[in-house]
Structure formats: C-alpha cells, structure tokens
Image 1 (cartoon, rainbow, N blue to C red):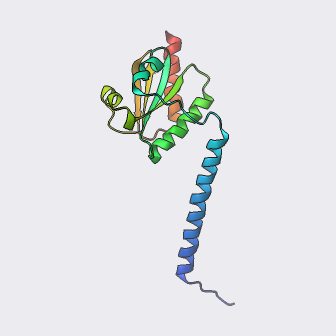
Image 2 (image 1 turned 135 degrees about the horizontal axis):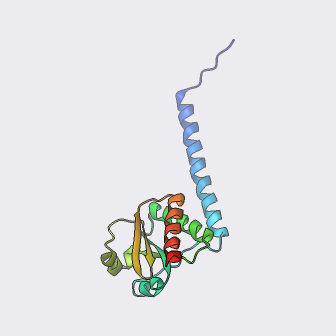
Length: 149
C-alpha cells in the first residue's frame, strides 16, 4: 500500500482559500437579501423629530454608529422583527454621530442600543448584540403593556 504525503503548506493554502470563499459568498448573500426586501430599512429619525415619532403609542428605537458591524447586525435583526411585527409598535433608528442632544438626553454611552418607548416615556433598554428571540420577547412585553391599559 502506497502512502501519499502532502506538505502542510498545502493545507494552509486550502484553508485560506476556503475562508476567503465563505467570507465573500456570505456578504454576497446578505447584500442580495437586503436588496430584495423593500422593507429592508428602518426609518431614520433626527433629534428634533424624535418626540413626534414616539409621543403616542409604542416604539422601538435603535441608536447606532454608522460603519459598525455590531450596529449593522442589530439593524438587520430589527428589520426582521419589524417585518414579522403584527403589533402597533413602530420602529426607528438614530445615527448617534448626528444627534448629540439625544445622546445626552438618554445617557447613551454604547452602541448599538435599543430603547423601547410607551407614549414617549422610556420603557426598557437593551445594549449590544441582542438575539432575535430576545428582541421578540422585548416586543411582546411592550405590546402587552399596551393591551393592559
């Protein structure tokens, strides 16, 4: 029986090629998914208009940093939640780089940050990466508050 010996550098090259393929293929799939969905955006709100947007009813607001992978991940999760949403909750996003007054008003030190509001009053906050299942729980609790009143 003849044994074949491969050099270790061939395995390293193969691994690098596999990782590059997965990286580029994954981004291509994400881009196609976001472009094929017409609801693939959260409305952007600027500082003077936030009060008007959240004043009545229920709202979930994402405070994000442009260019941040963590913020992009949370934007995608909230878009999924918005598209599944059967409750009267409205969804918005706010760029922290362009809204300094809101950063001070709500004490924001980290992004991504999701704030929930009921009739203009802050109800709950979630900082960092939050799985979709947890966002659904937060949404359901917020909707339950509306039904109880």
